Amino acid sequence: MCTLDKRGDLFILTITGDDEHRLNPTLIDSIRSALNRAKSESECMGGPTALITTAQGKFFSNGYDLSWALYDPDPVRAQSRARPKSMSKKLRLLVAELISFPMPTIAAVTGHASATGFILALSHDYLLMRKDRGFLYMSELDINYKIPNWFSVLVKSKMGPPNVWRNVVLRAEKITAEVGLKWGIVDSAHDTAEETIRAAVRLGMGLVSRKWDGKVYADNRRTVFDDVLAALGSDETVGDDGSNVDEEGNEIKPVSVSRL
Image 1 (tube, helix red, strand yellow):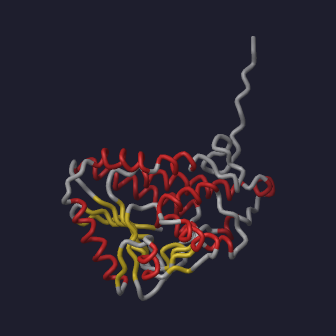
Image 2 (cartoon, helix red, strand yellow; image 1 turned 60 degrees about the vertical axis):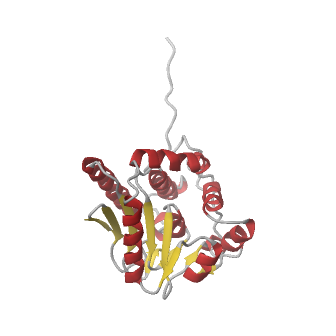
Image 3 (tube, helix red, strand yellow; image 1 turned 180 degrees about the horizontal axis):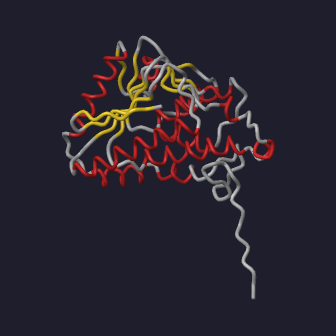
């Protein structure tokens, strides 16, 4: 699933394996667990820290695990779309945790990042990418999948003018590192995966050297992205209005109170 390594004041979260790193509840829970460990260890250290997220293999993440989401053996849960709801809920909680994370965050993208994999990378403060392989790709148009409102809010908060939004969402462009740099999506581009990681480490060390207070950093990030946090409360594409679905995709029924 993923590992968390500590290198001085840096935490390096690596999504492991040579598969597509599809975002299902198991992988999302593993990433969230690693974030909680980094947060707890950082608090114990008492000084500034930074997080780098990367992945092994050809993919950073190829998006939602749709094969898992759309084939629920339980017909009742399938009818209520419990698996898509669970996957969406957990991803939105992960994005909210990254926005609230008490240290700078860096995505070192060394493979393809598609759909929600692209969204995961964008949810970091910095996005570094290798030049020799991989692209950023909002594939929803090509697979006939409607993007939820919160995707749109995040995209608009993280990248430049409307023509870039159009190219990303309405042309489903496969964005190389060089193009991403030109469009202001990618912060720096590097020749190999190894150089991308080394650049992320240098950036992380530079950020740590600023000696910022992590809680203040998180508060300021939440202020900047308050519209994203508000949008993360619901996902209309899976029928989650923000109050009726738990993390497992089950509907939360209102509690009836009998009157005496």
